[in-house]
Image 1 (cartoon, helix red, strand yellow):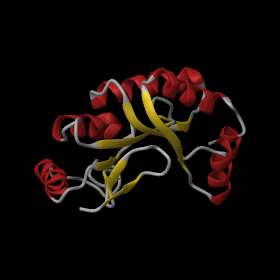
Image 2 (tube, helix red, strand yellow; image 1 turned 90 degrees about the horizontal axis):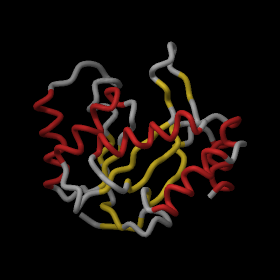
Image 3 (cartoon, one colour; image 1 turned 135 degrees about the horizontal axis):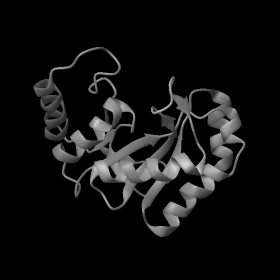
Length: 166
């Protein structure tokens, strides 16, 4: 598997990654647990070392599954935070009262002291206009709890705003 730099993170990863939303059972309906493991194992076997997930995929179950399935020393995980499932209906939240514990829960579920990459999960333009979430991610990076951060953008406007924040 060929490798390439992951943006400006300093991480070199496989050109292909495995996105896990469809494996969580949230995206396309029921899943067969053994097949999920088979897909993850096959990704590793062909040299994929980058895995994309989110704290909401399977309500955190996908992060736990990756932690139990992929070797931390030779793989990278991009996870996303920012959707509060405790509120009905679920809501986007990028305030520190939500982001701090969301980050810690992801770190615990993934079983890693330092997370590779955390993305804000589809924030609104309103959230992008606030410095609080970005200051938080920058502080985590400074403290060594996070290697790199970014935004999973749902629109071109949000993507442009994310570039300005970087």
